[in-house]
Length: 250
Image (cartoon, rainbow, N blue to C red; front, side):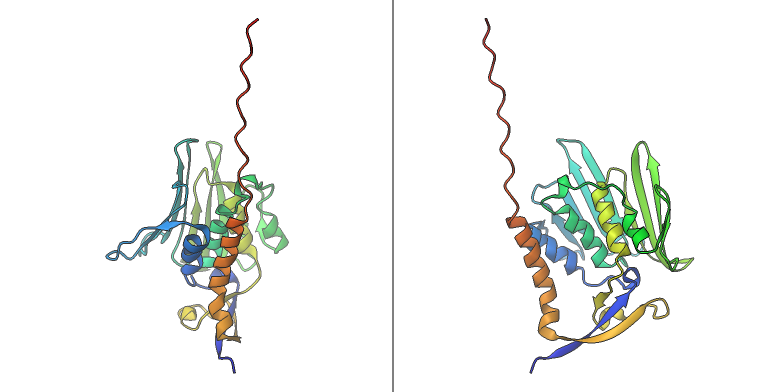
């Protein structure tokens, strides 16, 4: 007889609480090959991409964002930063890191990042603000010097923010679009009993369901296996184009 446990299915997902950080950190390390630093005296996690250009830092701070994603490419001059508050659901952050580590990342194009919002019934003004149907999430896009900055805030009440997300100028549009698509996804997210403590039951829909304990325990390993398979099955990069043969002088 299999053991079953109760898990909560919560919607809207943007008010479901942070969840398990390993959904992001373990997936990056074990599934996408990011290396991690280890400082047992500090309550933080630092992960670095295989090419050493992108850094994820998770550091609890009462007055600052907990999650920081930064990129610097000295060869191309590309620099960008994104940050997420401690209450940001890990599923939303994972959408960004999954897009970033996608082998087809550089080939993906974004035509309309607002499309998933409109399809989900959100109010969205092109190149401007967007709001969730319940008014709990508001997004703003600011254009400075030909680059876009995004600020997204979830609140329980006007003066009670739950989390903030910020994408600085230069952040690849595909990453912002991935966050927005995950934000608008109506699919509930799972949370354990302890992860529902402190949630506003008046603002969310919560249904308890029994799941086989083995199935619940396999969720993260299966996610890691999927990401690892995606990385190892990526086609090798095209060989560099040889330089043209020198022309003979006549």
